[in-house]
Length: 158
Length: 111
Image (cartoon, rainbow over the protein chains, first blue to last red):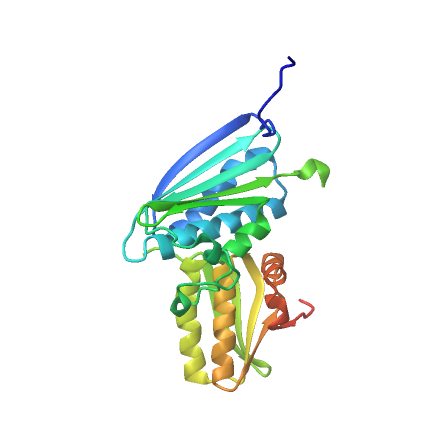
């Protein structure tokens, strides 16, 4: 009998660097999260456009924590970033807030639970537009984890 | 005192009331800017509000919310809103979300 590899998953490129950052959900930390992520990702030599896209997607994820996960209090947000040798950036934003009761609904363009706050309802649409993949895990009452994956082409191919 | 990462100033011109925006527009900075811009709209009731976005270095969907909110307010008072010279991050956000079809965009040669 021949040996068969049962796993259908493609082999991931090795992680070359990673970081974790915990910060409170003050709205002023949205800019801090973007700046920290930008500085960390810079080692992969992204183009200005790639860096701008990633910062924008991250800003949406962090803002969701500030506005929706912790609507009545300041809670902690964790940002994890993993860089792979093939130029893939994986950013995970986690909170321990109220959670998302209906993820499919939340992903719909223009859907918002905060119309009074002038949210455009385009947060997840922007995350999807600026990322190759967006994964959302949420348990109501426990919290949410959003993972954004973007493969950089870098300046060498531009 | 914590400084905002967004700056804006108002100029009355024959074309209308110009709000020149620079820096970063996110949820944090948009809320203060919204309050100030709305105050001046209610005080001066301009017929044309021009948001000059040439100096915007970063904008997420909070900026879209800010633009569409002012668009709605200007219509409410019988005026209109235009965006002038949106920078690349602003234009990218507008086209990706289709908002570029909803608001008037003016492009002028910068001297």
